[in-house]
Every structure is written in structure tokens, then in C-alpha cells.
Length: 329
Image (cartoon, rainbow, N blue to C red; front, side, top):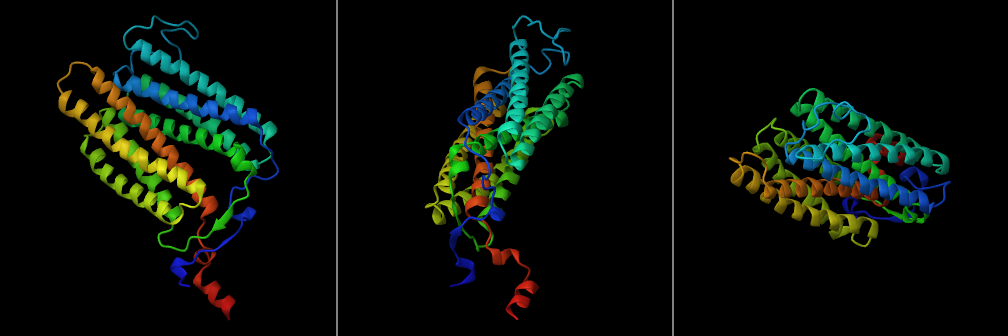
């Protein structure tokens, strides 16, 4: 059998995966992680509403709101978007701290405990970046970083929900080594990279730090790489459910996102370029575009993790040629 098409299946070892060992499925812990992921998605939508309605400075101070830590201001105009966004963010921070503590107490996987701490650190960074966008009057670089970290935090919340799920903890997957070049895992990492570039370019455009054309051009790259990844996954590893399902979802979200991107471009750049303030079609198309983009990024991260678990790089690919020659001798 040729090396490029070599495929073997064998029981999974602890050295080749994030296999859940020394822990048991805790349904309440898992449900809480799912709640955090859903709440974080709501936070991303709320943030997109703030940006799309040009409401970023509707509440001019931070960390207080109009000088108060607890008093809810009159929710009119852009204040209703900005202050609601802040309240949702505060709840997200609290939920993250609770989940991290809970994970440390009930989950025996050391890497999972560390991931909980990373989630806390990420949400703190996200809050600080959000404050800096207000204090420095919406600098495009800081605002774009705020958007990028928000989606990173959403991905962390999603994978924590996956790692605490029954299927991840209790399944005993078999490995099917991937000897192709580039490997499917490489393609998934490349997909995440181009999506992050697209995220930053889109954020810079929305925050008036860059023209629209780099975002549109990179969309072509994103479409090619993600389609390549999904087709490879579905054409060769469709029999692995953990790979097939996120691959199908990723491809579906990609197609949806392309349509939403075209709609957002038409409403904001073409039809709404002379609008005095954002109109409803502009707001809706942009918010949905951002939301689906977050789902697409998280799905791609999930696919990468499942590929790493079920379809790792063939061992021969990871051993230097000199070592292989020495072993043969």
C-alpha cells in the first residue's frame, strides 16, 4: 500500500488525543458549560448590535455607567444597546468564574482545569479591551482586538461544553491515521487561521480602520480553504461521525455566511453609504453576518479538535527520516 494512502485503525492511546480519563460525566457541569456557550453567543450578538448601531460611546464612561456601578440608566437611543451589552458581559464573566471553579472541583483532567483558568483570563482581557475602546474613543485597533478576543472566548466556551459532554468523556474512539499531504489536521488549522484574518479584517472595516476590499478579497481565500477542508473530511472520513457532523455544519455555515456577506455589503456599502444613521436592513444584515461568523469559527475549531482526536497525522509523518533509516538498519 502506498504511503500517501496508508490508513490504519487502532485503539486510541492517551498520547495521541485529549482522551478524557480519570473523570466521569457530570450532567449539571455539562449543562452549565452549555449555558455559558449560549450566553457568550448572546454577548457577541449584543456587541454586534452596539457596533452596527454606532452606539459604542453612548455610555461615555467605564467601568461605571454614567458614574454609577449599579444604577441602570434610562435605556433610550444607543444607551439601550451599550448598557445591555455591558450587563450581558458582566453575567458572562460571573458564569465563567463559576464554571472555572466548578471545573477545578469536579474535573480531574489537569488540562481541563487549565482551560477553565484560560477562559477566566480571556474574559478579563475582553472586559479590559471593551473598557479601553470607550476610554480612548473607539480606536480601530483596540476595537478590532476586542472583537477578536470575543470570538476566541466563544470558541473556548464551546469546546468546554464539548469536553464536558457525555460523548467526549465516555467514548473510546479509534484512530485512523492520515498520511496524506497536506493532512486534514493541517487544513483545519489553516482554516482557523484564515478565519481569524477574516475576522480582523471585518472588524477593522466595521470600526472604520480599513476599507472593505481586503475583507472581500480574503473571503475568496476563506471560501477556498474551508471548502477544501470540508470536502476532504466528507470524501474520506464521512464514516467518522465526530468528523462528518462538524464538517457538514462548517460547509453549510460557509455558504450561509457568503450570502450574508453579500447582503451586508449591499446594505452597508452600496445602499447605505449615504445614510445619516444605520438603518434597520444595515443593522440586521451586519449583526447576523457577525453571529454566523462566530458559529463558523467555533465549528471549525471543533472540527480541528475532532480531527486531531480521530484522524491524527500518521506516525511515520512525525518521525524524522534519519530516525526511520536508523530503525530500519
